Length: 475
Image (cartoon, rainbow, N blue to C red; front, side):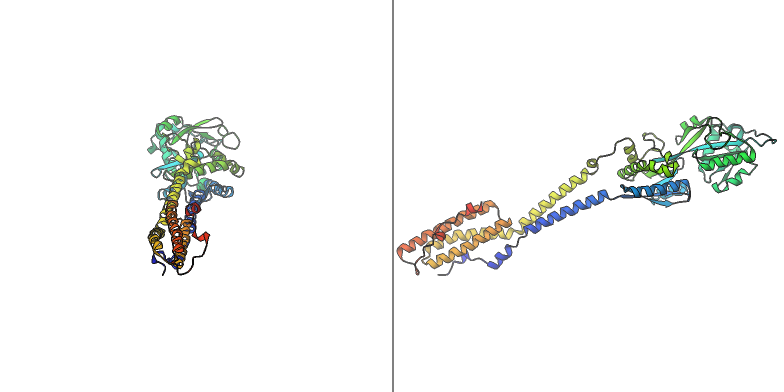
């Protein structure tokens, strides 16, 4: 009697189903998670490179910025600088407004692009006004105060409108009509020509108090036209109140190197900041890192560039004329965000992503095993159907063949369970059916043995005839 087709097993299909996809799915999930984590780490720890516009070539500003860039590289911190050479602060601001640079070095009283914030003060520029008193034997100058400049000619060092605008403010606030003062501009390369121009009644320069060019220019005018009379801006506080970009300051006695002491007493004047500025859209974390690195290297820069000692923190007050960038303010005020504050969103995002990948992997694994689950259910139903066939068979050989096929089904079911295609509950249900099948085999062998109906005497094989304890083995 042939083996009932209910228990036949397609061994090729069984072999294919035993391909272990689960480890590969797990490996793919782990690799995906690792790739995401590495990408996030690379992004988070990659140094930020900031472009900074500075000029003119050969100026103190450019020298300082180049030294900053070298120091940042040597320190290996989170920020790098790429200097962009310009012909001066105006071009630097134009590049900043056009999005062609991230930072710019400029004067605080120039017209800034919209939404521009201060990052650091490189120095304070002081207004220095003086008039030559005349050489011995020559007529003494009548210019002893700003009010006496009406109808006079004044030499102004620096091209562009910044110094002219500042002079107009000083004259207006001092009660002098700017239209009655003739201002002649000279570039820094034409200072010698200016000092020799005897038609000039006074001079104006704007810069750092320790700038050598200011001290040299004052000394040159003193040699040619007599000791200078420094002109005090007596209305400096009123100017600072009406024009917040300017500040009331004092030039201390002896501020300019040389003999005799110049000035011989403190002089009230106006100062304007020389700044590093950035658009407010620039990342707060990046600006905070730049500001932190700048003040960390300031002391080391001072060894080679004394001008670096003038670097100061910007005003972080909300109502400041030029507000500090939120990133710089966070560093200065000690409100920088911690690592978790900065990256908690990314960390939780990664956790959610990994959770999602795990869910997708589990669903995919469940989906790919659907045929194995269906086939297992079919095998279980076939075993139930085969119980009836066992009770009707009259051949011990047929019973042995059916037993062998059931063993194949058991092996395949256990392999599916190991692969995760079927759950423990399904395996337990299968074990109950298999136990009933084995019991039917045992009972039928006994009946055939008593009636002598078998074609071939049954062999005593207790291990085969005993019911298979499938539920215990599965556990």
